[in-house]
View 1 (cartoon, one colour):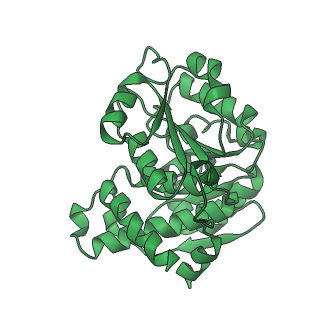
View 2: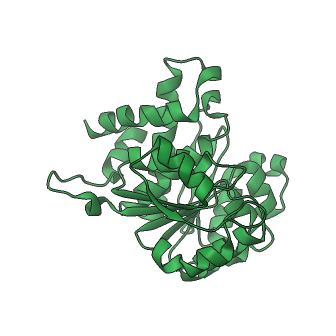
Length: 287
């Protein structure tokens, strides 16, 4: 039943399509310390069907990404004194960087002033769907009302620790009432919330809510969230509405995790293995 739901939501892929047909995603992420996170997101996005994936980051991250995934388009941003993306450099290039149908921001960026300024600038100025994860969420933990500045309903993808920082609720309180916490936050701040844990909740500001309770320890590894964000952002760039993209992305990510853990020990599964399984998941959904 859950797969049938995704089948009805997936973007159509006409044989006569070109790369522009399937949208352009910009991933704004990475830092000197966290170079791998945006690469995982970009790979997952490309494997999920987006036509063009652009990575806007510092040169050290771009060099790492270029050696691994030549299909990515790159936009170089100056590095700040602490090894993060420079807000001044980003804002000066934002018109170029923000072109396209979706932007994913926050992964691997570090929690600093520059990240806060980058996220704030996108929330106030970007016209299409914005997906915020990781340090992008940490940057607004004291002012989640900034989400209300978004031109289009944004998607946020916090794990329970990040949600605790956003809501000032304890992790225990969140786990006791995941659906209510996600729904209340979505309604208050007009965003789609993907509350990540072994049980994941997807909630919309209109009151839609779905819980995915297929627990799988294979996904309990650093980088899994980056893969999930890349899938959701890819579907957003291809034209899915925010809640549909978040729901479909979470289900596809879960399916890929279950598929890979059926042939590998859960201890041994890497987020990159989950990306490898995306092709089989989409093949099944398209059949």
